[in-house]
Structures are given as C-alpha cells and as structure tokens.
Image 1 (cartoon, rainbow, N blue to C red):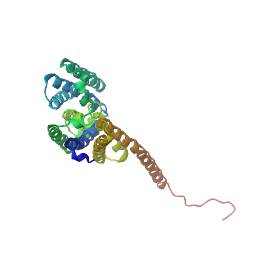
Image 2: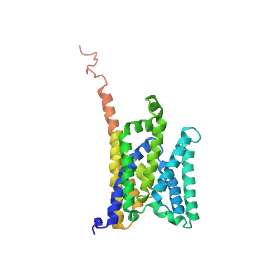
Image 3: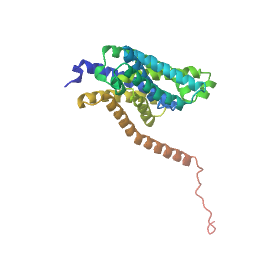
Image 4: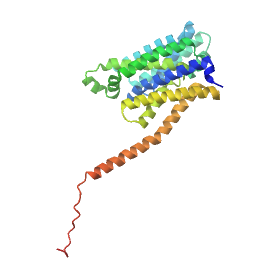
Length: 294
C-alpha cells in the first residue's frame, strides 16, 4: 500500500517535514540557553489558547499562537526585569496554561477530551489550511533562526559577552521565546503540545554528540529532526500507532545511538592530546654515565 495515494498522508508528510526542520532549528538555541523545558511550558500555554478557541468556537491554531506568544513574552519580561526566576516562570507556564485550557474547554461543555488531539498530535486531521499555516510560519522561523544565527548564538551562549559586543540582548531573548512559541503551536498537530519539546531538544542534543561547532550542530539537528519526524509519520501509517509518540521515540533512539559516538570522540581527543603532550617533551640524547668506560 502506497501511503502517498492518500491526500491526508501527503498533508501529514509535508507538515512533518516542515516541523522536523523548524523545531530543532529553534531548539538548538533553547539548549544553548539551558532552558530545555521551555518547550513544555509553552506547550501548556498553547493548551490555554486551544481551550479559548474551543470556548469561542474559533480556529485553534491562530488563537493558540497569539496566546502562546503573549505568555512567552510575559514570562521573559518578568525574567529580564528580575520579577521572577526562570524556574518560577516555567512553573507559571506549566500549571497556569494547563489549568486555563481545561477550565475553558469545560466551560464550553466539551471537557478535556476536546483537547486530546492537540495534546498528542493528530496528523490525519491536518487540513490544507493547516498546511499553509505551517508552511508560512515555518518559513518565518527558519529564515529568522538561520539569518540571525550569529546574534542568537551569542545571546544564547553568553549574554554578558553579547552585551559587550553591543547586541540588544533583551530584544534577541524575546525573539527566541517568540520563535519558540510559534514553533510549539505550529507543531501541535504533528507531535502534540505535550511532546513537542522533545522534537526541539533531543535532535539538538544528539547533534552535539555527533559533530563539533555551532553551525554543524544546527544543520545536523535539523537533519535529524526531519529524519525522525518523517520516519515517525511513515511508521505510524504502517504500524497504526500514534505519530507524535513514534516521532519522539525515534528521536530518543537517535540520541541513544549518538551517545557511543560522543564517548569514542572524547577518548580519541584525549589520546590525541596526550600524544601531543609527549611529542612536546624534550628528547633525551641517549647518553648515559658509566664509570667503567671512557
């Protein structure tokens, strides 16, 4: 059976491909900032957006994007102005977003069941309109994440040094969380709001085990994201499994396989360093003192 014969699978594969590119692209910066759980927090805020859309009987994706971006900006501003730590901000995102989403869905008379397809992904229900939304927003995220890579990397790695360089760190930090919020909401039909953080973080972590350098790591993470997203979508069709869960498990499997590679590279680097140190040692002339010979 050829899965491309079905229009819903064509839409699903396009969506998975774009999500696989986009999520690790912004996830790489999230990992650099040591905020790997940010995607989870934003996913919970997006649940509030979906709940609001259910309550107002409007399209979920646009409403979820607006709510998620607003929540991300609010928490980032609180962090920047010292009103809350990163951990507190993430806790607010986690619990407040989830509670608000379930509450609003209940007020609408549909309950938490109305949120299920957004929590764990539902590629088979992706419409042509959804594909266009994903394509447009993916282009925005990718162009920004790649075009401003030097600035975003500097801010994510060492914010104080970035300030010395004259970069507007507050603006770039806000840009990162806004791009992350867009990525999370766009990915809710692919891997689901509860699992999207894995697609943002795990390929980036695996790429760090396989290659050196930020640019190589970014491109490798995007490649691994496409591999796992498309592979999980195809596998879910033939094995009749949930696509989001399979995508995440494939990403974790790739990370597990990358671990021995990282170990071997570390040992090889240490061996090379030891050899280099020995080569720099002074060479003995081989002469010895012997009192019985002149």
